Length: 216
Image (cartoon, rainbow, N blue to C red; front, side, top):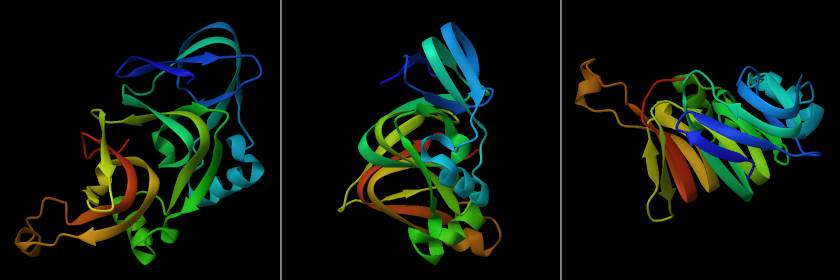
């Protein structure tokens, strides 16, 4: 795993010859060694198709390619950082949550309507998140950003998880999502808490939830 958590808001990445790391532009705080930073125009490991998909999806968060030999400190906006390891599975994450990720991971874009049907599309409109979500697949590590820290909540066939859409960060595993309503009397009289919609995740996997309803 190329990332080491320095504290809750900084990670150190080890850059090795012949390997790549992709990060958000402007996320580099400091580095040591012979390391280069170049704008990424090919959509990460997913190539041109990934770049086009992300632009169409509104998920085209600018990336830079990090190469060479040395160590790099990453952080952004004072946000809390969580490192997630992948062992051949796929991580579903909002593009603006990505701080940095292993260059071995293949990047793509998933239309939210394909998970949860029409409700997936509704989720994008209601939460302000896009109708598309970035996917990262393979063996490697991802550093994601969140407000107030992140906890991992297991999802099992017997116990689906309901998450406030604004608190959702990412998930992986054999998981399906849909938007459900929790309309109560407070909402009926116009005094709702803003939690009339919940993201229901079912199946087997893990969902990462931030300790805030604030968007990045």
